[in-house]
Structure formats: C-alpha cells, structure tokens
Amino acid sequence: MPSPSILLAFLLLALPAAAQEVVEDAIPRSLTGTPGDATRGRAIVADRQRGLCLLCHSGPFPEEPFQGNLAPSLAGAGSRWTEGQLRLRLVDGKRLNPDSIMPSYHRREGLHRVGPAFQGRTILTAAEIEDVLAFLMTLREEAAP
Amino acid sequence: MIHRALMLALLALPALAQERRSGFEDMAPQTQAMQRDDTSNPGMLWALEGEDLFRQPAGPAGQSCASCHAEGSMQGVAARYPAWDTARQAPIDLAGRIAQCRTDRQGAPPLARESQGLLALSAHVGQQSRGLPIAPPADPRLDAARVQGAALYAERRGQLDLSCAQCHDDHPGRRLAGSIIPQAHPTGYPLYRLEWQALGSLQRRLRGCMTGVRAEPFAYGAPEYIAIELFLMSRAAGLAVETPAVRP
Image (cartoon, rainbow over all chains, first blue to last red; front, side, top):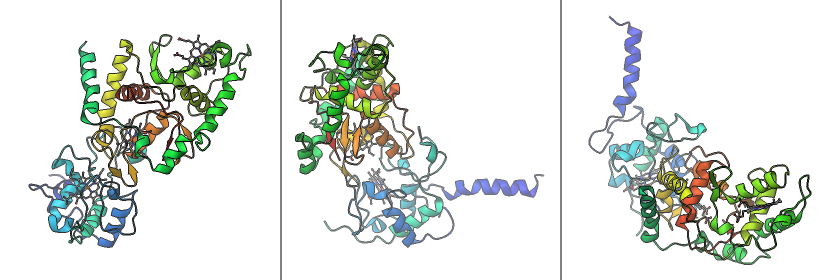
C-alpha cells in the first residue's frame, strides 16, 4: 500500500500530461484550470521578446509599426478557430503541421542546441498560454482585405 | 563520389528555385547609396586602416605584410575563400589565413577574431576583390566541409526550432517584423552594419542569426562556421564581392 504522499506525488505528476490531452486537432482543457486574462495576453502577443508573434504575424495592433508577413493575420483568429484548436496550435502546432515555422510555445523536447538561457524552459508558461488564448478569442473580426 | 553528387544536387536546388540576389537589393535606397559611395560608406574607414596596417612592420624581423605580398597581389583572393590549409589539413577562412600569416610568418602577437586589426586587414584584403565574381575553389578536399555546411544550414536549432533554410530559402523577401529576409549570400563581409554601428565579420552575422532563434552559437573561429561559409559561398558562386558592404 503506497503512502498517501506518494499517491499525491503521482497525481501531481500526471496532471500536466492530462491537461495537455490532444483530442483530434485541439487541446480542449485549460492548461491551468484558471481562465486567462485577455489584457495580459494582448501584451504578450505584442511583446517581441515574449510572444514573438509579430515577428511573423500581423494583427490589430495599430501602435506596433513593424509586423511580419510570414504568417496569416491574427485578426479574426477567434472566429476561425475554437479555443481548444488555438490551444493546440500554440502549445505544439507542429502536431498539426510538422514543417511549420511557428514555434511550439509549450514544448521542451526534440529541440537542438538551445541557448543556455533557454534550456529546459518553454517559450511561454502555461498561464501565459491561457492569457494569449483569452486574447485571441476576442479577435472576432477579419482583417480588412 | 557519392558525396560530391549529393553536394552538387544540394547546391543546385536553391539556384533553380529562385533568382539569386544579394542582400544589397533588399535595402532601402539610402542604405544602398551609403554603400555605393566610398566617401559615405563607414566600412571604408576600416579598409583604410587595414591598408596602413598592411604596410606596418610587426614582429621580430620587422616585416610588414607588404614585405611579402606585392601591391595588387591580393586581388581575387577573397572571392575564393575559404580554402584548404595544407599546414593544418583543414579548411581556413580569409580572416584565419591573415591571422596565420601574422603569427606564423611575421612572428607578431596574434590578432583575435573580431578585433579591430583583423577586421581592418580583412576589409582591406577583401576590398581588392570588389566586383569580382565569387569563385569557390573546386578543391575536393573541401567537399566534406561543404556538405557539413549544407547540413548545418538545413538543421533546425534553438528554442524557436528554425533552420537557416526555413528563413533564407523558403521565405526570402518576406518580412520578419521590420526586416526583409535576404537570401543569405555572404557577398559583403566584413561589412558595416547599421545595427552594430561597426564593421563585423560573417561569423558575427551568423551568431546573430543563431541567437535570434535562441540557439547556442558556435565559438568564433569554430570549424562549423567555416563549413557554413563554404556552403554559402558555393551557393553564391558568381555573385559579385561587395566588401566592405553596408547592411541595416
């Protein structure tokens, strides 16, 4: 009979794995169990050191002059996709398209020569992913053509 | 033999896929004008300093570079580097060759990578190939390193998990934030980069592209950089040398 503390440890270890469970093309369950904050999410998306999104994407950020054109506009993302689909796209979009240039924001494995300052760390934390998702879900309107 | 066939196939690919163009073509007209006019090209300050250094005696025998290398003898040299170094039985880049002459032949204190002196001498030697087509040597001893360079170019790295090819072959001409992604032809090194406010080597540029994807860069002078340079020079064969170029 394992001690309760060992059981608890097992449960804790199992948690993140269960939270990231992929169902078809989505991760339906929140990574944290707490709803994200869209205002914080917007700041992360616009931040070139944290979200890095605007290196590749454009979006409804009139105050940001240099936006990339390597990827579709983020405008309307919240109406094109469900939250679960966007969660998988952020956590590990390479499960959808292995050749994608979009980084996997919540994956540590399978990387090569990661710089010392970033080793063992994901690009965004689980809470940051949920914040970004909350923001993306507010982007209902398509970009002007 | 198989190696060579593979290499030729790899090298032919990007050339077939798209018209090759120097990063110069992607620059704003003002930056292009800065490079074209020697009186406004800041890289010329380093090239002139290099010209002085070339004639300055150094080391116990009081010899200068010019004691052994006649005026004009450096023409075309930069267009065919990296080359094979028989002494070390390995490929060597132009800066490495200059540093080697300085220590082994002049007996002078070594010039570190990215030091002002080595950059200046490299700019001076490189400038004498300006306008000449890049002409990588057909030396089979370089093949293995060239193949290694091609592999390093195609390999994903860093926390962002991106290869050189994904940006420079798959998306040239697109914008990464404010920067237009060039085709990565090493036509102008060492060059003056506005972002650096200084002259820098190709290796400094490659480090920037590696740390940009949050990868651990190789140490200056590492054989991996020389392998990548060999591959990039083959890919750029025929394009004109621009040293010292200007880039954003």
